Amino acid sequence: MTINIVCVGNLKEKFSRDEQSEYLKRLSAFCKINIIELKEQNKFENVEVIKTKEGEEILKNLSNFTYLCDVDGKQFSSMEFAEELNKASCETSKLTFVIGGSYGVSEEVKKTVNKKISFSKMTFPHNLFRVMLLEQIYRAFTINTGKNYHK
Image (cartoon, rainbow, N blue to C red):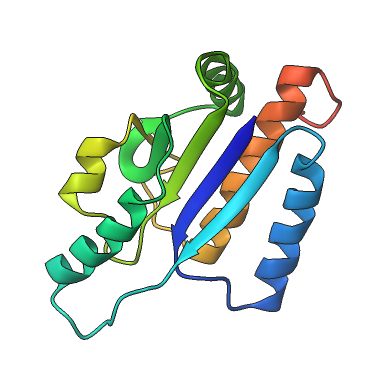
């Protein structure tokens, strides 16, 4: 299985890059995982213009099954998320997760994705959320393979 994480912006802090590296290393036992970082648009432009430009780049990187990380998406427990990924992996060998920019994503992206998921109604910094997503994907694989990680 291949998992792509398409995200607007990059990890600026060393501690976030280190955490990402740790989960990428752990996930390599279960899947091929790619981080696709897209350039943030000029913050001085109109918000809709920013979302449209970032959305065009996001759309170029989607696979046959895509999850959008969105505050209005469906929330899962870790066990339910593991089941969701297991089910999706039976239907396709390539999954994509999208983490939008500071202003969210364009309506075109929202219409194109297969499912919207949410970790919370709260807002998280993008660097923290990326690590949280990697951790939950790792947790899902350990649950699905019976590894002793999930408590």
